[in-house]
Length: 117
Image 1: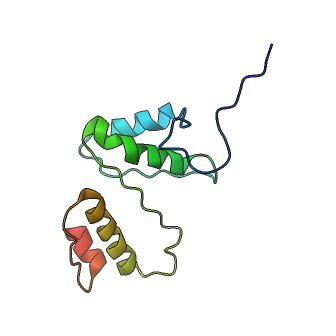
Image 2: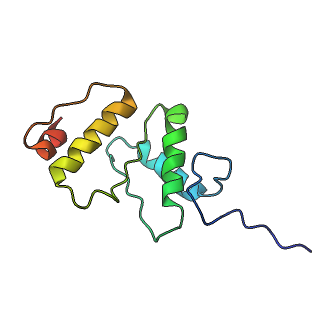
Image 3: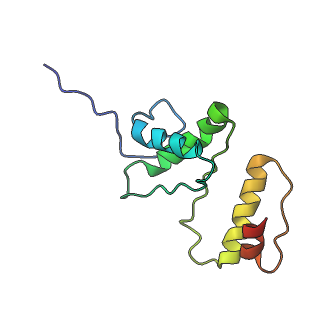
């Protein structure tokens, strides 16, 4: 009897490839949350190297084609030295680019303007 092959590999994220397997429980929970309009945020957390980025990449690649919704992958890892307003401006620019809409001028208090608009 041969040993089963472990489909999970340590390495770069695989969310937008055929190597993405499993995570049905996470994907089902995302779908459940998206079906409830009163819930508007999803937080994915966990230990290092367990596939969080792969899940996010999978959602970004597949969510709009499956439900007409958009998932945007915005990595905060290199943003620790930035102010909140700078991060929010980068996030707003990224959203505008991904959705092909005009970039908003968030002004002096970017975080407040972003939240309001």
